[in-house]
Amino acid sequence: MTSESDSSIPDEVFRSRLDAWLVVLVVGIQVVGLWLAMTSPSTQAGLGKGAGVTIMVLSTALLLVLFWWLYRSTAYTLTDDSLFVRCGPLNWHIAYRDITSVSWTNNPISSAALSLRRLKISYGKWAFVMISPPDRDAFIAALRRRVPGLVVKE
Image (cartoon, rainbow, N blue to C red):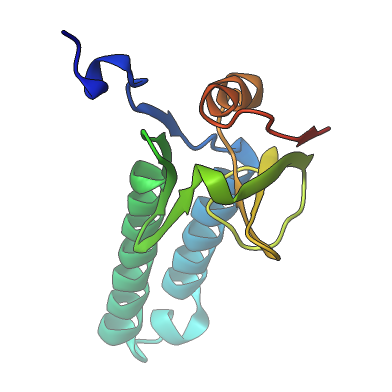
């Protein structure tokens, strides 16, 4: 006697790919801003020395922690019945029956992706989410196992 769960495919988790240029951009902007705050003439003259630098250090730390949180939390989980996309505080549950197609894209609009090497998952009538698994082919293969007849546009 086998149970229904014995025949199900185990959950698969794909982390987000992370582009090096994005890390350089986020960290670089913060480091340059901190350096400018610490070397500005007003800081050297004692104007706002404590408050200005403190605010810049705290905002830099906050933004770097936020970026780290997004990096650590962004993942795409294929469950028994749906695709679960998580990116920081944002979550999408997309039932496999609602997925209409998957296409390759480099669209830079905001999404649950830390790379421009993305997949656009279209679902419902007009909805979509863009994700960036490190191995797009492996993700598509795993999704095809769960969504028979999946339309893939390259």
